[in-house]
Length: 130
Image (cartoon, rainbow, N blue to C red):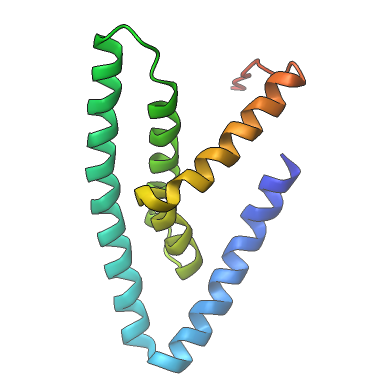
């Protein structure tokens, strides 16, 4: 949890630094246009990939099997789509690599290892605080 909080604090700082440097190199208008275009393209890709995953989950369920891999892929696409909605170059790069099938496997394996550690530590309860 501390790592996530650290990343959430550090990511906007890195994004802001890179945006300033990119703006100095390419110009303000070009940088803003780049951010908008990558965000839109990435979100469209996330929607397209998400539909494919939902179709895959439905097929697995109709065959009577548990869609574990498809759910992990869907989680990667969801997180990637959320990152693409956040303006910034770093978040766009991470978001796109989570959505693209060729690079998504890296994140999927990381999530698997994280879940396995949680299971091994018997930390399997989800607590919702109101």
